[in-house]
Amino acid sequence: MAIEIYKRGQGKNTRLWSGFALGTISAFGCYRLFLKLSSTVENLVVQMLVPVFVFGAIAALLFWLANKPSLADFMISAESEMKKVNWSTREEIVASTIVVIVVLVFMAALLGTTDLLFRTLFSWLLES
Figure (cartoon, rainbow, N blue to C red):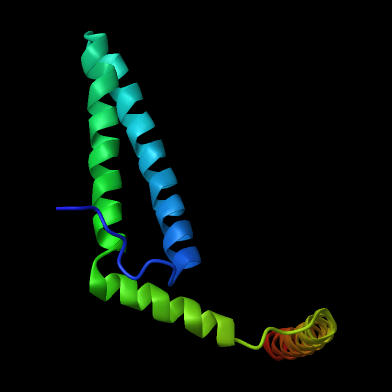
């Protein structure tokens, strides 16, 4: 059985970056396994080879998953949909951010004033 990439060239970025992210997480996990084995097992060969074999098994699983037709088709369609997104310009983002900050300041002032009024009202009612 030859190793083939399902729909080569399609969804390349999505598959590449997903594999890189999961591979990085796997590498950190295997490093933690190595540290755990270093503190419990005295055989250096076992300390080194077990994490390497685990990482190799995870890498093979990731390759198989990335080339599984249903998952690969999902990644291909996700990448094509992301290319269709109309991304906001810098000016639109700045304007939206300013609107959000102004509304937050207004709401904070409104809630603070309401709280002060109710606190004054209830303290006046409780004193009489």
